[in-house]
Image (cartoon, rainbow, N blue to C red):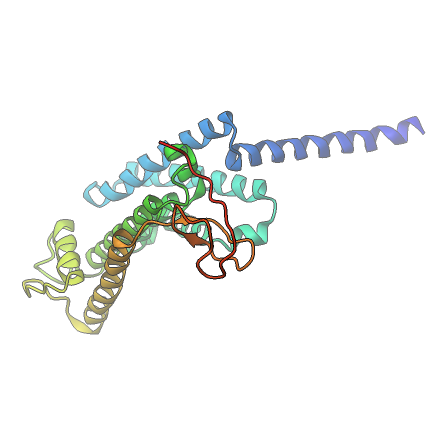
Amino acid sequence: MAKGRKPRRALGDRQDAVKSIKTRLNTLYFGKSKESIRFQAKLLVFDAALIAFFIVSPFLEHGPLFLVIDYVIAAVLLIDLVARAWAYGNFRKWVSRPIVWADIIVLLSLVIPVYAANLGFLRILRAYSLINGQAFWRIIGHGRWMNSHLAESAKAIANLTVFIFMMTALVHSGFAARVPAVASYMDSLYFTVTTLTTTGYGDIVLPGFGGRLLSILIMIGGVSLFFRLVQVTMRTPKVRHPCPYCGLMRHEADAVHCKACGASIRIEYENE
């Protein structure tokens, strides 16, 4: 009997060890302790450096060293993605989040080097996942701005910026070799901004059906995101606090009653 118990005990010890590691990762990635915040801050610095690299990468020479850097970054992001998925606990809920799909798309753009010139524009989506992630706002301002008007404005700015750089890279990768006026990445950025603002100087025109379709997408998508930014920036700041009766989330900062149902609410705030 003693011999039969040892394998079971060893199996139980391994299961406990695996569970302990998973709990540890969950605490580091999603916790709010000082140790968790330090760990998330290091990831935040790494993400900022990564986004800066993705922005300047179109101006760099894409030689063997660039390919090695791509694969190293892809390996790090893959490990981080797998660790997050395992630590989250509910894989189905985790994979349904938009920021997770953004990270997966960034990873795919890194591991398919043959099509790097065509998929490089997808890498800027890392900025979207960074700004829209809870860890960013948990660290910035010590969590005070997580559901604030400032956070919504920053997300709107980030969404517009990501759209501009994605469209710029798409224009450059698809039309730089076909349009003499698009001689550099800056020319592609110039065309994207003038098209987005509907200025339309006409000095750069994308040819063919694909060029016209892309120009339409830039105008419609860019104008929509720009007006969203104006709307978020100009409207009266509100706080997110669920009404216990009707569920209304947005209220004035000094509200004591829900304007939808009239129920009493108590919004926590800090005196300055």
